[in-house]
Amino acid sequence: MINYRRHAGALIGMQTWLLVSFRLFSSVRLRHHAVGIKAAGWMLKVKDTLRATVNLTFDGQVIKTYHGSDALKRFENEVQVLNYLEAQGCPFVPRLLEADREKLRIITTNCGSRVERVDPDRVRELFAELQQYGVRHDDPDVRNITYRQQDGRFCLIDFEFATILSDASKTKPQ
Image (tube, rainbow, N blue to C red; front, side, top):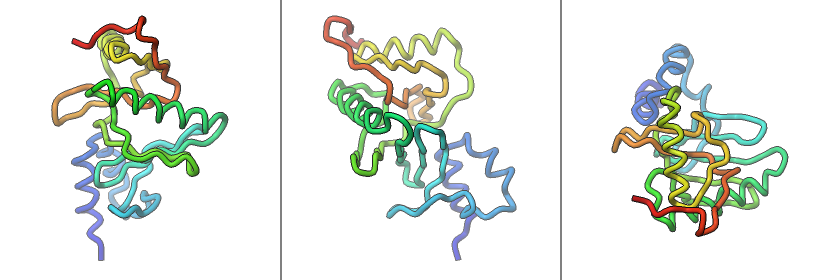
């Protein structure tokens, strides 16, 4: 028998923002929230919109599946941008671990917990810092900012609409 409370505690440690939803459903077994099984274990659906479904695994990976209009185009763009940012050494974006074109699915590292509020000046600074690595996000919203507790760093996610800039329009990272 699986100890669901122990597994829920592990997830809460990884993603503290999920604490409220688990407390609200404390009498419901975790498996009611699970959406599938991966080799590493259960996954939790954290986003399900017309454009994408995002699942979080207990081992700290993020699985994003694209659907809806232009799904292939958005998938290919996000893969290209994440590969580009890794090559540029950008330390505050997820790393692409796997891309499956047939399933329109990517697997990335987890970049921390989502944030609900960030000072508007800080939001502008974060997205401007990304441009120093040669990418304009094109969806500069708080929902695309996470906080990585391990190093106290704000990170950026969700690059399906991002643009890789020409060399002339970027500045060197400091």
